[in-house]
Amino acid sequence: MISSTQIDKMTRMEKIQVMETLWESLSKSDTEVESPSWHRDLLRETEGRCAAGQEQTVDWEAAKRELRIRSGGPLILGALPEGSGL
Image (cartoon, rainbow, N blue to C red; front, side):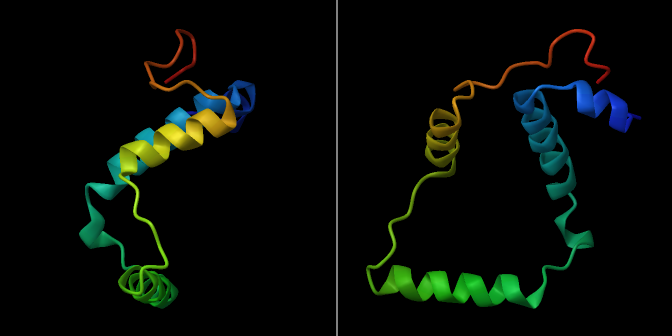
């Protein structure tokens, strides 16, 4: 188990990498989690804007790449550095 002290010592990018790994693990068992109703509402709103041509869809990998460029993070996430405790 990782402690909050270990997390505090991590760089922002290391924390993001850990969050992505955790999310990937959690999302494998999505049947255990029920989305709140506001998720459904927002999805319906977005679908409506898409149908009206008011939204532009972006491939998830392209979106992550764009966010990494904007944040100054690496374009390809590699392994965590040695000694990170993970």
